[in-house]
Length: 204
Image 1 (tube, rainbow, N blue to C red):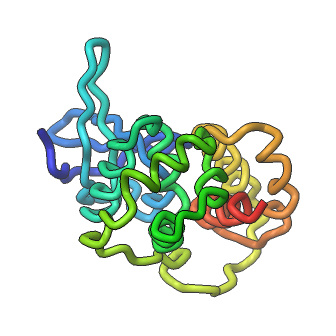
Image 2 (image 1 turned 180 degrees about the horizontal axis):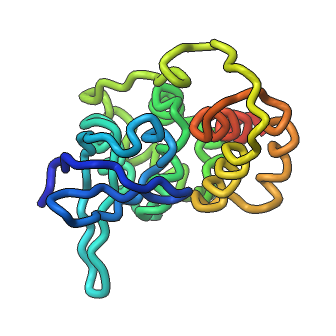
């Protein structure tokens, strides 16, 4: 069982990254792979969870120890699978997530893909009062809260962000509701576009 891997990030896609370690490329599924964009071709430490099934061995990667622990708590809930757990973590407002669980806000939890009313209620039942040991910190966009980034004429970042939403399980209908808004934004990175798209989806 792995706690973390230390290697070179060699590829970043909508659903996963590749971490090269001792000449071997490890495929790691990530909630928001583009958070690692500034570490492409650089050595980094990624916390991992290894899931073993009869037909597959899968690695899931996380920014830090606390994000990994939150993920493990989420997938312990009946009805939350590995993909649903990543989709929930993709929204950086983990403080808001914990607060929603503690205050029993079922409607907030139902905004995540794959989470219906029954599953939302199960999350609250299983996790309320059990997340106090996590040091959850809201992560600012690109290290600065509310800072506007310069205009980018390249559409690749916003297109990659939309692909990432699909990989997380959001429907085409849901994506169409926020796509016009994020295309108007002046962001430089895929990570920034994806964070904004996820924030808007939680408001719909």
